[in-house]
Image 1 (cartoon, one colour):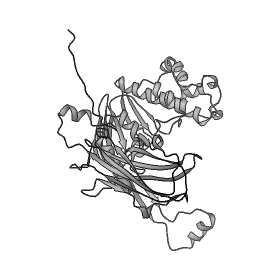
Image 2 (cartoon, rainbow, N blue to C red):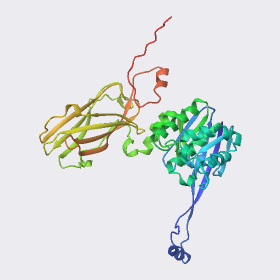
Image 3 (tube, rainbow, N blue to C red):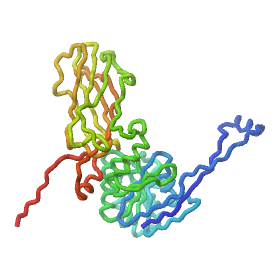
Image 4 (cartoon, rainbow, N blue to C red):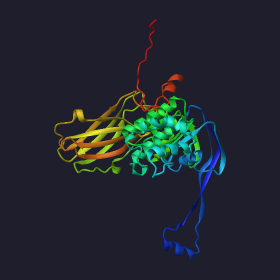
Length: 410
């Protein structure tokens, strides 16, 4: 449906920019002229997008994702390269860019759709669906300049996704409007995929892009550095969050040391962390065995406190929460305490995880201490699996041990 061959794009950047009249006048009499530098936003980008495929583009800010989509949408022109579309394409980039503020929502539906060369008959057929999906029926004959930003975005998203196109180019607009409309957006995109439409999606939301897309492209400094499945997300996160997930060869985990931790309440004197009784694998801690997270805490006052852990998968998805709430002491005298959380086997998947810690006063609900990503670790499954099982676990934030049985009924 789409062929991209050796696409390149550069922008001219000037140093010593004139930000005021005073600096501009001073520059006239200066011998130091502005330096012109080329910024290479895209460098020989090539890929194919096949019919019915949902291709995700991930990468840090400045990697070239938006520039690529703007070129594919016809907003910008490439310096070099070739683009071939095989079908009708629509884009959701600068949402509502085709709207006229003085026109009503109704008029903007026809204006925006006509920019993609849809006939008035086709727009008439989809008009009610667009309005109903947007949820702004009462305001459809009001000028869009009077719309809230949420109404504006909802109408724009509805127009594009209700049109019957072959290829949809989407840039960071999955999370449009309130929570209810965000769910509608996700369901609409899933429906397009189920109908065999072709999608190219750029996003920083790793959870959604891993669910929606069956293939991913990782971009860095304007180049495609890797393509593949959900495993590409893990590589991206190591680039995006090197402070937390940059493991050296042979390292399976990082723990923040006490000298780097500053309690935010005088009720706690010291706190430190450890990981114990884990089984090392070839590439990480074994997912097939239990391990312990140990917290040593020293208090200076009598209080009842709860320690809570929040466990996140590398893409930022919250996996689960555990705490000491059910076995909190009625009265905790000042002193040193050891708290042990035993993590179960056959829960974690072959990816990386981080742990946050919070300590609350049970009586006042005040937070006594907080440390994000006090522990980061990578998990590994070293037991041999069949090809079908390996395919099943290409994605997912957990890998539970389960039993499946097939019984012949007749």
